Image (cartoon, rainbow, N blue to C red; front, side, top):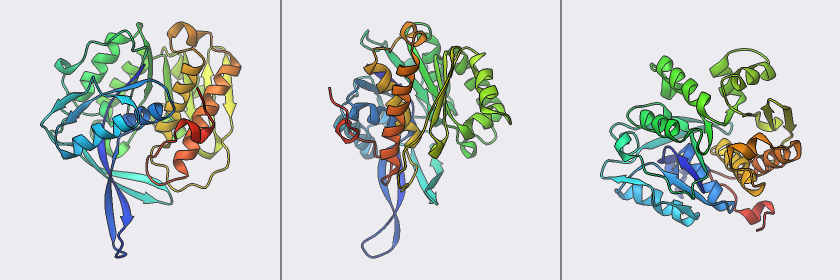
Length: 311
């Protein structure tokens, strides 16, 4: 099982009412939550760990996970409120306004960290859950505890507006977590936010030198690239009509991890021996899955049959 560790929230997405008025509709979301949903729908055993409220919105989150075949047995439930994010779309690109004070997710503490069963082979971290304490420190502690024992993947999924005023602390935390991770995924924009100007190859090499075995860079309509000590791979994206990009990177993460599971490579040792053909297959699955997500409104990852997967 792949355990996704991070935020779960309600995205308020812009819609038009039957009366033609601009309005917002609630959808279960959050970067790490979306990755868990996508994994479950792709048929890969997945679980989710986060602080989730027992309020009405929290029940929506838990029910949505269950409906997508995601294990919810490790959730840390509390009566604190649910995080809400209002989404603005401009030419299909999403920006966010977060309401996260004293929520179930943000107040997750190290005392809430679960003992992990043996069936957990890999852990995935990322998103806004790595910004604010105590939750951010708790996720970092969980990653540090499991690093070297299970496969670890991280995607910071950087939201500069959410980090404002905490850049130094955030950069230091992400640097520590990257150094202990096996796979790091960044969008090309996130790569430059973290590492500054420069060619992708040079910046990826700098990240590899920090400790990961594999660095993944997504480049939107251009596809995705993978960098390791053995070289690099690049796979193109297919042509799709973009409705919005909410959840695209999250779905790519799930597709890549699902690909590793299908290749029997959900371990640090197997990752080290990943062949070029296997890397390409994982990149392709991530790209295909993300292509479906961007072709429809909201973070709505595909089910396995929608992208031709079976068994």
